[in-house]
Amino acid sequence: MKQPSTIRPATGKLGILLPGLGAVATTTITGVLLARRGLGRPVGSLTQMGTIRLGKRTDERTPAIRELIPLQKLEDIAFGAWDIFPDDAAAVADHAEVLEKKHIDAVREELSQIRPMKGAFNPEYVKRLHGTHIKTAATKADLVEQLRDDVRTFKKESGVDRMVAVWCGSTEIYIPPGEVHQSVKAFEAGLLANAKEITNCQLYAWACVLEGVPFANGAPNFATDFPAIWELARERRIPIAGKDFKTGQTLMKTLLAPGFKARMLGLRGWYSTNILGNRDGEVLDDPDSFRTKEVSKLGVLDTILQPEINKELYGDFYHKVRIDYYPPRGDAKEGWDNIDLFGWLGYPMQMKINFLCRDSILAAPIVLDLALFMDLAQRADFHGIQEWLSFYFKSPMAAPKLYPEHDLFIQLMKLKNTLRWMVGEETITHLGHEYYD
Image (cartoon, rainbow, N blue to C red):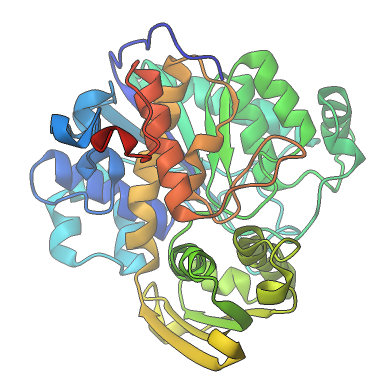
């Protein structure tokens, strides 16, 4: 990325398009509407509540991130969405049962006005969902054109000046990139031929990039991590990012694994299981969709611990991940982890974690931050893969042949240093020698 000489100001309104108007999307929207009325706090949002140190520790310069960087104000955001069911955002929020009625009722009128556009959806890729609010077309190329028309219509009707899209839809079955994904030309031919390898989420990502809309992928699907869309994003100078929001159990792994590695503690095994009862849990009850999520989750430890380098400590650990659909739990996800460690002289130790979290409550600030940072990236003329946003993803994207960074603390340093660099402030190494020379 070239350092921007200027960052275009965040003037006018920003449209945030959300493919998938479910629990995560409606929790995000409701939270933003409440926050801009002063009726709720956007806890968990780096853009709204985070600070950033500038200069030396002795300089005592620690502004809020939103004061340093020209981010879009919450007051000037409009939401749009696609979904395979026709319910408005208020009805979806009621059904999701993530938020208390008092919070939904406080902004119900605004929520009820957000009605989803028809989804581009083939149930072949998400077998547990059977939508009723779906586009029809002869080819996948036609579906892309319909999605592009949706983007233009939303811009005209909402009066927004710029747009970003954040995928909040379901996990699709595992289909790795193939020949059709290797170039723009091959992908366009695949759209016309209804290639099976082109899934629902890829239609949205392709349409948004063609329309100049930055796209961030919040699911483990292959929406933005294949050569054809990298090529298109470079040509159109559009930022893309992904994949899979880092919320519950994987968030804990990216906190703990760097600590084990820092102290040179060995790992024999890490067993993880989740129960959840929301739409995501229902979708992941299908083995083919779970496979996509499993691949996203399993890569974290290998990348952080680097067993090929630290063979004695991490060369032979066993890593198991399970997700079980349990309807009574709803959106209140529970993660159990059993970690078998060893220390001095190989003596065994154990750590057990029981994380009772709320899936959409953890995801909502990520959606907001990604939307605002992706808009910032475009105004700074960043394009292609936005690795500096890896902080938000289970399976972050990086340049081809470059392994992704999973360590949460390195990810945060990269993000904040990128913000410093964007505005001409000195990046921080934490070396600290200058205080003692």
